[in-house]
Structures are given as structure tokens and as C-alpha cells.
Image (cartoon, rainbow, N blue to C red; front, side, top):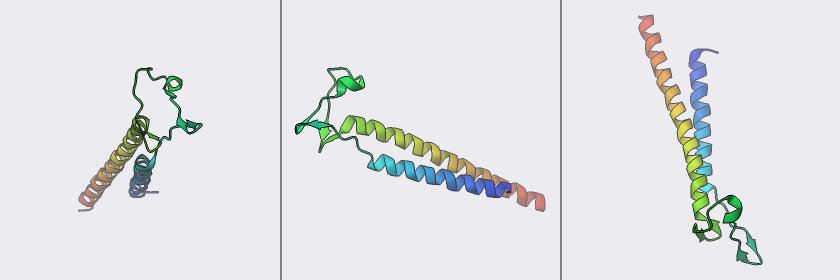
Length: 102
């Protein structure tokens, strides 16, 4: 496997990871558990302060969902940065190879 192949594989792999993470960030939801048709206040079990507000919209915990989406967005951004780095190294390798061939 040449350096060019390795860099291309790195770009493709990192791009796929970024795409998957951004898809998860866009679609992930944390549903609020219900008992007897009523929303359960489970903040005490996850370590939140008893005075914190719980925002529920359409059965989804907005605050916890936002936090989870932020984590997936961070993974996606990191993978996209790695893909861009591989592309930059690929361009640099191409320039160096062409200059050496002259």
C-alpha cells in the first residue's frame, strides 16, 4: 500500500465516521420514561440537582437530548478535521512527488 492509498483510505474512513456521527446527532432522542401515563421525574437518579428544570417536548427530554447531540457533533467535527488533515497531506504528497519528478 502506497502513501497515496493510505491517505485516500484515511480520508474515506474519516468522512464515513463524520457522516455517521452527524446523522446520529441529527436523529438521536432521549425519551422520557412514563409510569401509568405520567412522565417520571428521574433527575435524582442521574445526579441532577433537585431544583433543575426538566424540559419535555413530545415525550423527549430536551436538555439531555441536546447534550447527547452535542457529543455526537463533537465526534463528527473531530472526524471531519482528521479527513481534512489527510486531504492536506495528500495534496502535499502530490506536490512533493511532482516537484521531485521534474
